[in-house]
Amino acid sequence: MKFITDYPVRSDLGGEWVKPANMIEIIQHLENVGVHGLGITDHPAPSQKWLQGGGHEAFDPFAMLSFCSAVTKKIELFSHLIVLPYRNPLLTVSGMASVDVLSGGRASFIFGVGYLRSEYAALGVDFENRNVIFEDAIDVIRKAGGNQPVTHTGPNYEALDQLVLPGFVTLPHPPLWLGGNSNLTMRRLAEWGQGWSVMMGSPTLSKTARTKNIETTADLAEALANLRPLVEANGRSMKEISVQASTPALRPESKASNEEKIQAIGELSDIGVNWVLADLWSDSISESKDRYQDLSENILSKF
Image (cartoon, rainbow, N blue to C red; front, side):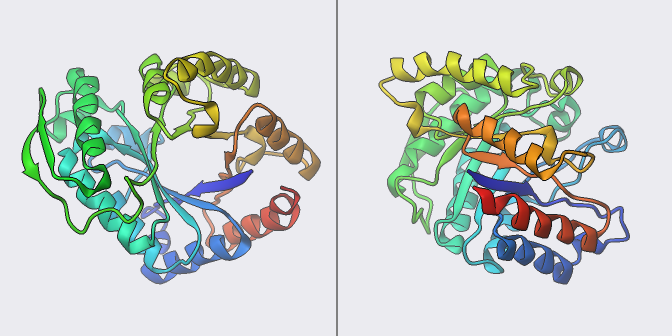
């Protein structure tokens, strides 16, 4: 089992979380205590209403992943996740390749369609057409694998012998993951996905994110059981797909004992999860560092 966390971008807390020196301290602490992965989110232009209702800020994912790669040596880096329709796919390939080169091949890219209608509108992207745009964009990205010139004619994008350089050092391309729980996500996972970032939470959260609800480990076990025949029908094995999920035991408000946390993580492992999200952040940098130190000493060491 590997452990991942997302960097919390909190400019509302006096700016301490977005000062480069503090960011380096936090990121290097995560690496030093043995956290295996660091996720970077993507919301370039969310609405004020969404932010005030509990939404979160985000750095540009490619800039932030490059920053993280420069101050670390071994922690794995993830876009968690990039809303693929927001950008021209060749710009996405360029960002991916830059991060891949600069990190020495430590990056994986989780993609999703997103759910914020107002953000789509602000960026000039057709929300209702988002799944068609996603399919078109991922086709371009996969054609760029192996650093080949891209020729593409699709409903949204065209390219004629276009080449992105510097190219990928991870060949044919860095791992391509999918986020979300929809039936379309399951189909894409079965066909080509290399990892699944499960959105686990309450029915309210799932409704907001416009995705199928997966709340418990039992729900996830059922979803994985349903995914297996789809994967095998495409001539693939579930072993080809990494799975990242979460548990209430590893959230800031959790009162679970270390034994209960270990049990919850073990139950995820038993159903095929190999990455678990450890969301332990508080408003305090020092307290957050202590929490991840405790995670390292009492939980990570058991796996």
